[in-house]
Amino acid sequence: MISRRLERVNELLLREIANFVLENQPPDTGLLTFTSVKTTDDLMSARVFYSVLGSDAEKTRAAEALNGMKYDLTRSMRRLESLRRIPVLEFVWDETPERAARINELIQRIHTEEPPPPAPRRRKRPEGQ
Image (cartoon, rainbow, N blue to C red; front, top):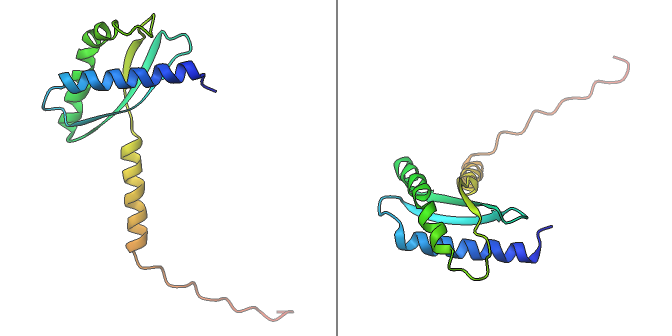
C-alpha cells in the first residue's frame, strides 16, 4: 500500500509537471495529458505517465519535447520546499486511454450488430437407439 507521504509527493509532482509543461509546451505536440506519477519509495525516481490526443507525428514530437524538457523541469522543481530531493523523471506513454477507446469501440460494434440466429434444437434420441 502506498504511504500518504508518497501519495502527496506524486500529486505535487503531477501538478508541478503539468503546470511547467503547460507554460513551455511546443504548439505542435497535440493535446498532452498527464495521467499519473509513480515515485519510488526512496524518492530517487519517478515515472510520469502521459497520453497525447493527436496524430502519430504529434505523439512523437510530444515524447521528444518531454524528454528535452527534463533538465529545465528538474531545475524548476528545485524551488519546491516540500521536497528535499527531486526525483529523476522518466516519461512513460500511458496506453490506458487508447485501450479504453478500443474497448468502447468493440462494445458499440457488438450493440449495433444483429444477434446471431438461435442455434437449432437437437432432438433427443429415444432411449435404446
